[in-house]
Amino acid sequence: MYLLDSNVSLWSTRGDPVKMARKISALANGSDEYGVLEGNWSGDYEGGKSPLHWVGSIAILQEYYKTKQTVCYGQCWVFSGITTTLCRTLGIPARSVTNFASAHDCDGSISIDNHFDVKGDALDELDDDSVWNFHVWNDVWMARPDLPKGYGGWQAIDATPQEASEGIYQCGPAPLAAIKTGEVYLPFDTPFVFAEVNADRVFWQMQETGDLKHIGLNKHR
Image (cartoon, rainbow, N blue to C red; front, side, top):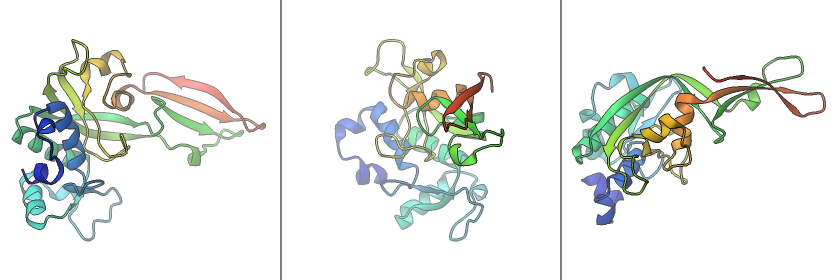
């Protein structure tokens, strides 16, 4: 309730699970709006606790409520655990989801692009896209009266701050029915979640003219 009172003033928003799930995905991380948990992937956790320290949501949420400060530190599975607790507390069914070989598409191309110079050596400075060995987010269950019939049920949301959505580090709810059929035009952030699980890996080579030439495609990575 403290999170809601601090960040969600409109009662109409509090009564809408679509808006609330999206808001929770933003409030669970500390990148915007003084959320619950700060992400850290550096390996240096001075000033806080390692993400591996946490064994549940209670200690994190109690520390956040006591100090009124973002708690340090977490990674994807910790964000997902917090999100599960927050959603269930507010009556939104939620579960954690693990994805292996999880693509991270940075530019909305729905592909993971790898670039090479004329000799075939990797151009790492052009490769903003990446693939994590695993990633954890959430499914939440709700009706989607804002979408055509058939898109209710499980929706993907992600509290790990990866890419900004509408200027805030939030993600979803994206209907799983749309993700499974590739209907990436539906809100919210369906293209990003689709890319995480089904992006093509595309290979490009720099030509002596400075142009990029498409040299390969892998649809099954």
